[in-house]
Amino acid sequence: MLLTILAQNVMIVPVVPPIPPTPPGPISGGGGGGSYAPTRHRYTYEEQEEDKRKDRIKRDNKFIIEFLRTATDIINNQ
Image (tube, rainbow, N blue to C red):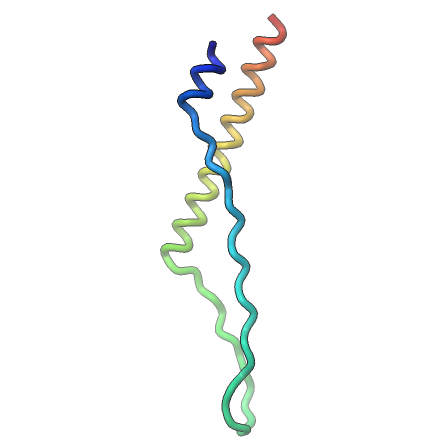
């Protein structure tokens, strides 16, 4: 019964892997020497918030799965 209630009320959100960054393209421009120093990618605020949200979902999913395993073990041992 407990598992039925949990299954109806708890929704596990799938975790989607992040999109890998695109490699830098060819350097365009004339021939005048100099060196190409790629700028370091900085996370935007939105990307940081998205990462935090994904981490929270992973933790929540892990907790729910452990809880269901424990509940199943308790029910099976009775």
